[in-house]
Length: 563
Image (cartoon, one colour):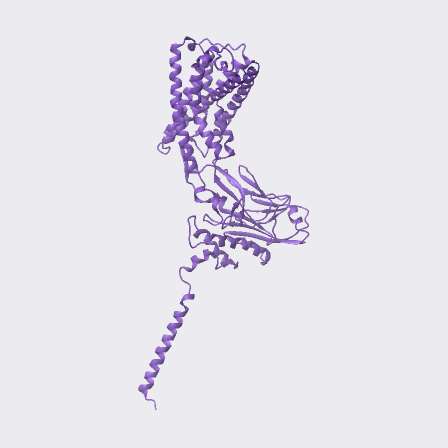
């Protein structure tokens, strides 16, 4: 018979075992409980793979913010990017939804006949779900046109196709950036917006007539460039942007992309010159300007010595023009070096004064190079009836006065001030006192770019005529053709430094970074070239002195004018 004491002991033992069993079962379940670290593992791209309900879409979209530009071990960019690419395929192949309206994603899905007679147009307004537009309907700034030939190309296999059009906001993180838009490149996806076009698992490439996507945007800074691209999953380890099969038609407030395939598209915004390149070009320009200033000073001193030692220097106009151009270049280089060494944020009044001075001497250089070409035309091409009273005085009025009038007009429009070149992430590449980047772009293009093109084209035409005459003269000189051709080439190179042919290299800078380096180097050394020409012209060797004919005489031909 069990006594109450024994029964109580057995009951206590049972309760202890029961409690112990519950703790054990709780311990065993611990590995499957959700820990604070679990949400970060979503950005590994595996937990939500293949799950596309709104909850999972929003959950995965958090990785747009969490996966920043810096390396993040909790993010697998390849898996996450594949998730969004597969989602478009899912919408076409497995989903019955026709519209997705989330804060970061707007999608339109519908069936279309492959036997259509007109192109299809859709709106791509970022804050709205894409909608189909009629042919004669007003087209919004952001839109896509799908040619009917696209659907005709798959007509033989399917009478109907399901099309998905998505607008995806990828944020400012690392997703869909790729190596091209690394932190060092200072580029970005315009407005962080992707446009996806998909027919599901059906690959569409090599279209005879490309599709057309129009991206609207504000006027971009002059140091930034836009490029139409698509996401190429075959590039690199996680994919990258590629422009193959796409063309870019730039506009002031919109860019048209034409591509021959379907996938995710975007507009890349990248600086033409990043900060490292700007710094390298600045150092080259500063070194070249310093060397030019030294040799221009030698040129000015040499002219002063010759003016006192040779009587004819007091009446010749050509040396005076060479001297004035040398003075302008010296002052321009000096203004450039001061501008580069000055902090433009210190004083607004000082900054606009420096900008105006730099602008003035730049225009003076352009003007005097054109006057060099005019003087060359009168001496070599026109030849006769080249006497003008007060000739150099009139040239001086134009050479110094015209730039002054342009600077006064520009100043009256309040165009000078703080100028900065920045990338899309607002990182500064270069600061100086120049034209105000926000409101003075028109004045810059008119008074600098436009004025330079006019003077440069005039100088180019004159130099071409002079070159033709030099080599015509060389061919007419019997027995000395080889020597005359050599001297003619040197003469032409010397004259080209006077009329500013090195500045013409600026026209070639859009061809690539190498041409920008060439322009910076040769243009900053113009003063060195002028000094060499001056020495060859007015300090000739004995053999050149004894020679009374040939191309070298072109530079020594002179006119006199009554002062």
